[in-house]
Amino acid sequence: MAEDSGYQPPLVWTQDNETSGTFSKINRPMAGPTFEKELPVGKHPLQLYSQGTPNGQKVTILLEELLSLGHVEAEYDAHLIRISEGEQFGSGFVAINPNSKIPALLDRSTQPPVRVFESGAILLYLADKFGAFIPEDSSARIECLNWLFWQMGSAPYLGGGFGHFYVYAPVKIKYAIDRFAMETKRQLHVLDLHLAEHEYITGTAYSIADIAIWPWYGAVQSGAVYDAAEFLDCASYTNIARWGTQIAERPAVKRGRIVNRNWGPIDRQLHERHEASDFAQRTQDKL
Image (cartoon, rainbow, N blue to C red; front, side, top):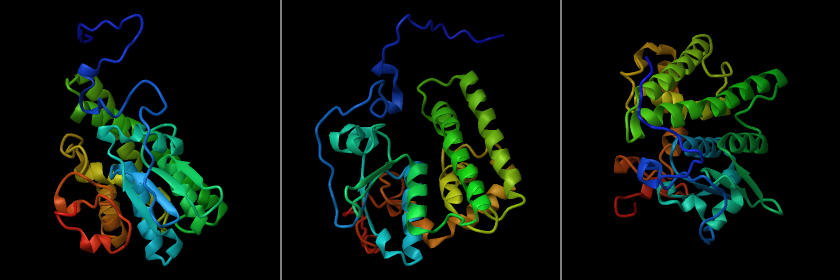
């Protein structure tokens, strides 16, 4: 028998800020800027405006990986955008990303500068720009893009669906949690079966597909995101665990995952990154 919550949808929906919960300042039912504010600009050609969420980590991990390969042109300034305070609705940010979501990248090495928004688009842009972390062979490239777009299409069910209702919703709704837990477990199983036969997502080569998927599914499987590893029986996904641990040990991943992060243990935060030395120089006072 269906649960009766007592809620009857109105004829015309309007936002109720009192019941918006944790994300009252992150989401709104319209587009465009709500205030005027120019974005800061650092000295490097690549200007990143982001926060260290799983989507934000994708880009900083890739940039650190590119630098580790010796691509000095991948030096970047990472500016913190505090989405819980609504900074993504400033005019400068909206000019780069009209969707008002992090991350957003401005490449000032070209004239006019190139704006890139949506994390998957940024990964693809940077991989093509530097000729790294994406296969050259056409069939392997398509396989990489298959999984990159799988992640982009699946993550809303994981983050906006399961994560929201399991962790953040002000009211626990069994139907919603069950619905998105089922979908999350299906996605984890898809990935686990694939990784049973592949070292990395596209085979033996680490790519932007791994970089896109790891901050979400690797973190959920390990319990680093949503603290739901027991609830989802994540220990059963042994192939994801092997792959996730392997990626987590990469030095560039260790650096990239803390950039623009402003929550959690203080030693895992680097609010802004403008030089490689910022990793060594960060202190509690600086943060």
